[in-house]
Image 1 (tube, rainbow, N blue to C red):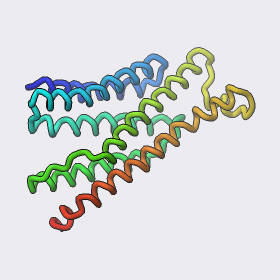
Image 2: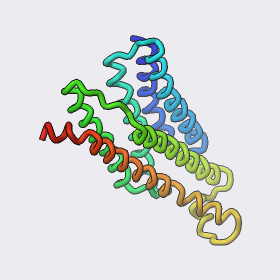
Image 3: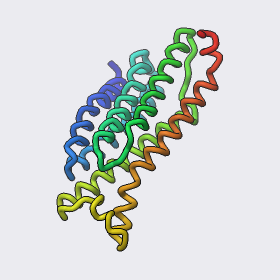
Image 4: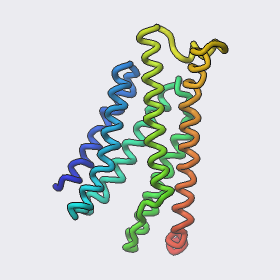
Length: 207
């Protein structure tokens, strides 16, 4: 097994650790969650570059790389739904994951016809937005855990105080996860629709 594929498998192995750290919802576990997700995101850039530069692109790598990405992103968003304080509705996560299944199906149809559907600009923006959104939400979780650990109070409770610097800051932090997830969902839908429209001939041929 080449180096690029080993890095991809390492990214998949990091997914359970990410889930555990997010679910623990403590100050340090939230910090570790950011570290794990950041490392996994960096490996997403490394494995592709290494494979191309060393001319070691394999069928296994082509299969594992997008799978690792989907597992990482899906795991994080599913965990977020399980945390009520974030206020991220399940329908957003369902839409995000459904898009991935849909485009995977489209790529499968294309592969059967020996057609490769590469990631385009819309897809790359979508992926970047998802990564940034997850990091922002994880930072919000760190903030929540910090207030709870050191002050015995949650930002949600502080947000009930409409006046004052901390009250305003808490209100902003309280709403950030929802709006970040909403923007991500919109861009994800746009990316999926763009892929389908761009390769609509493949669907018509198999209708």
